[in-house]
Every structure is written in structure tokens, then in C-alpha cells.
Image 1 (tube, rainbow, N blue to C red):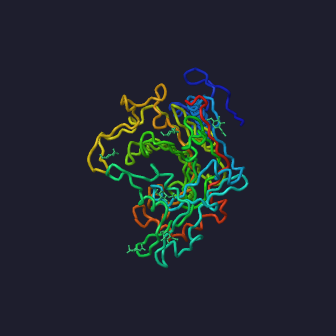
Image 2 (tube, protein in one colour):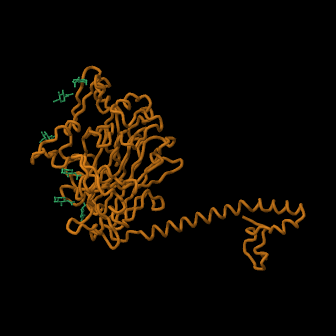
Image 3 (cartoon, rainbow, N blue to C red):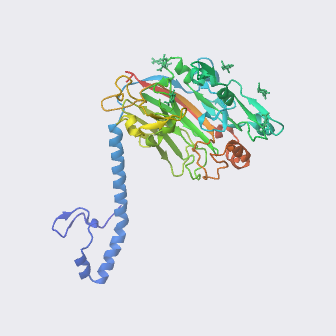
Length: 471
Ligand SMILES: *[C@@H]1O[C@H](CO)[C@@H](O)[C@H](O)[C@H]1NC(C)=O
Ligand SMILES: *[C@@H]1O[C@H](CO)[C@@H](O)[C@H](O)[C@H]1NC(C)=O
Ligand SMILES: *[C@@H]1O[C@H](CO)[C@@H](O)[C@H](O)[C@H]1NC(C)=O
Ligand SMILES: *[C@@H]1O[C@H](CO)[C@@H](O)[C@H](O)[C@H]1NC(C)=O
Ligand SMILES: *[C@@H]1O[C@H](CO)[C@@H](O)[C@H](O)[C@H]1NC(C)=O
Ligand SMILES: *[C@@H]1O[C@H](CO)[C@@H](O)[C@H](O)[C@H]1NC(C)=O
């Protein structure tokens, strides 16, 4: 850039200034300046103004980079990392899903507490490996049993899923208190998880989509120590799926519910997104979110206090592979995509979670209907004081081993897809939401690429580290 401006000029107060174009004429000067000269001055201002604005823009940009850099540098994980798990899917399906494999397929039809519309299968149609890439691909259930049986139009139809994993994923193997001091098998939960009835009279249908949800839970519970982490790093290189109402997630749950049932023992969402296009009004595939879920009871999940995201203007995360990273220490959790300068979530354990939660003193017990005082689940049971993870840091419940889950859900009624956005074909309160979704297939199915590799969430590799010293 060339400029005719002098390198320095004398300012009205007698001092010399380096950048004369930042000085405007005084009101008195303007008033005494002949018209012609004033025009010239204005012209001159309009000529240099873009340069001034550009300079301010660049300066602010540099300042932001410096601040981000300083902030990132202040919260860095300087501990030595030991690799505990590495899976690059080069060994084929058996190495991944066979006996002793790194991942385990969860088979379930109950909507996972979110009213999700898919069933998850152990079929290699829905989770398969090709050229060292793992694909989690949703397909239509009608391709297996036909549309009539999905809707029960030829008479009621009961779908029994093969290899249902309800017993493995339920606490106590599915046995619940019988109210008389003993336990009884939860047949209600079992049938909801392992079968679905299509009945055109009552309006119920079989889950219209088959998809995949895989985890390291079984290995983590067996205590190998190589399928979970606590303080360290998780890195997943993945490409988000494409198609309306797809809900991909790479996330973590505690190996043991040390502080009580969900969400008391925490949940780490490394990334969640939506398969809808970037024109979708509630954040489509150009948006990736990271979050921590925690709370003393399900009704008091404080996820809104520890949720953030990165979003691109034009480029969807379904176009290409990106690296999603979790950094986790005794004093913070950071989640980012590709580099620390594109963070999804930065959360410091600066206060005990119970304090941050700012909960009511009493809550209604959902079983008894009576008011009871709310206890801090993250306090030391002996002292009643919050558990301190490090000097001035309070990590509990994020001070335990967590295992990894990767899945592609479809739809759901929990609000991840809010009503009234993007021609959503169901209402979250509707008891027949899943049927409304299935009936609108002509609307959403054309947005799902025909080629499963393009439709699926694709995962290139997963790596997990722990701090070598365990803390
Ligand atoms: C399993 O984890 C231990 C440390 O917990 C580590 O020494 C070992 O190398 C890991 N094994 C594999 C196969 O990653
Ligand atoms: C599923 O199981 C139920 C109960 O055992 C049975 O009545 C039904 O026919 C089964 N469904 C199919 C499609 O085989
Ligand atoms: C789950 O456990 C129940 C009760 O023990 C049993 O009847 C059922 O066969 C089990 N199902 C599977 C798939 O293991
Ligand atoms: C189908 O639903 C109707 C209405 O709720 C009910 O009366 C009938 O028993 C159901 N049929 C089966 C086979 O579940
Ligand atoms: C989970 O709890 C079991 C039973 O108390 C224990 O043996 C195991 O070590 C715990 N696992 C982890 C990862 O904390
Ligand atoms: C609700 O009350 C029952 C019966 O007193 C008790 O067993 C249960 O733990 C209470 N629930 C919670 C969340 O505290």
C-alpha cells in the first residue's frame, strides 16, 4: 500500500504524531477553511477512512487472537499423557466388534429417554467398516420388514429386535425394587427396549429407522482400564452425517454411577450436531455443540450452564473430516474442533457444581409426591463438604472414569429439534410423534444421500489418553 501522507506531522498541541490521518481538523479550522479546501479535506477523509477502518479491524483481530492465545495458554494441560486406546479401524469388523474388540454395539428400541425414533441394531448395515473408516448409517426399517408391518396395516405386528442389550445396559441387569424389600425383573422396560408393536387401531408403529450406537462400556466395566479415561485427552476424527433430523453424537458416560443415577454422575458431550442443511433455522450441520450434563436429579439437569458451540457461516461439518478433541484435567474441561482457537466448550471447575447449580432447597420426590430437602450429591458423605479435586478446583462429578459412545440418533421428542422450526413434521408433545415423522417420509427421506457412506457419520480414528500420573 502506498500513501502520500507524510510520515509525521505537527499536531495542534505542538507534538508530532506518527499517523496524521487519525487527526481530524478542528471545528475552528473547518469554519475558517475556504469551501474548496473543505471539499478537498472531506475527499481526503473519505479516501483514508477505509484505511482507518481496515486498520481498526486488523488491530481488533490481532487483539482477539492475542487474548484467545493468552487465555488458552493459561489453561493448558501440561501433564504427561499415556495412550490407553487407539482404534483406526484398519483391522476390520471383527477386531472392532468381535470378542475382545474395542467397541460394542448397543441394541435397543426404547428411544434412550429422548423419545428417539430409531432402533439401534447390531447389523453391519448400520455399523460397518470400509477402507479403514467406520460408518454409522441410518436406514429405513421398511427395507427389512416392509412398510405395511412398520405401520401394522395388515394387522398388529410385533417386532422383536435381535440381540437386545437391555440386560447389559440396565443397572442390576434389569432388576428393580419390588416395593417389598426384594427385586423383580423390569419386564415393562425390557419389552419397551427389545420389541415394538405396530397397531393401526391404536396408532403405534415400529421404529421406522434402524441406526447404530456403539460404545466402550463393556470393556470399561470389565476393568481393563483401556476403554475409559479420567483426566487426559480424547481425540476423534469424524465426518458428521447428512440428512434431515439426524442427530449425531460423540459423547461419554461414567463407568460407575458414583454420585447417583443420571445426571448426578455426569455426562460429557464432546460433539452433537444435526444432519439438517445449513439453511435449517435451529442450527444445522454447520453447528457443533459441546456440553456437560450434571444435576442432582433428572429434573434439575444444569446443562445450560455448561453448554457452548462453534458454528461456521457456510461450511457444514458433514462435508469433511474434522478432529474433535476433549482435554480434561482436575481443573477444567476444554472441547474443540481441529484447533484450540475453534473451541466448542471451555469450562473451568472454579466452584463446586452444587454451588454453580444454585438449586432450590427442597424438591418434590417423584415417587412419593412429598417435599424433601435436596442433598449435594457431590459432597463427601463423611464431611458433607464438596469434594475438592485440586487447589481451588472442584471437578466432581467429572472426577471419575468415563467411557465413550458414538451414535447417530433420528428425531426425538426431547427438544433437540424444537417444534415449529424447519417444517418439522412432528410435535414433541404428541404421543404419536414417531408416526407423524414416519408418515412424512416423502419430505425428509430425499435429503438422506442414497449412498450410505455419504449419509453416515464416518469415523477415521479414536484415541484416548490418560494423565500418566492418574491425576
Ligand atoms: C492399556 O492401558 C495401559 C495403562 O492403563 C497401558 O500401559 C497399555 O499400553 C494400554 N494398552 C493398549 C493396548 O493401549
Ligand atoms: C415377537 O415375539 C412375540 C412374543 O413372543 C410373538 O408373538 C411375535 O410373533 C414375534 N414377532 C415376530 C415378527 O416374529
Ligand atoms: C434378560 O434377563 C431376563 C431376566 O433374567 C431374561 O428372561 C431374558 O432372557 C434376558 N434377555 C436377554 C436377551 O439376555
Ligand atoms: C390394537 O389396539 C387396539 C386399540 O388400542 C387394541 O384394542 C388391540 O388390542 C390392539 N391389538 C393388539 C394385537 O395389540
Ligand atoms: C466400578 O465399581 C466396581 C464395583 O464397585 C468396581 O469394582 C470398579 O473398579 C469401578 N470401576 C471404576 C472404573 O471406577
Ligand atoms: C424418594 O422417596 C423414596 C422413598 O422414601 C426414596 O427411596 C427415594 O430415594 C427418594 N428419591 C430421591 C430422588 O431422593
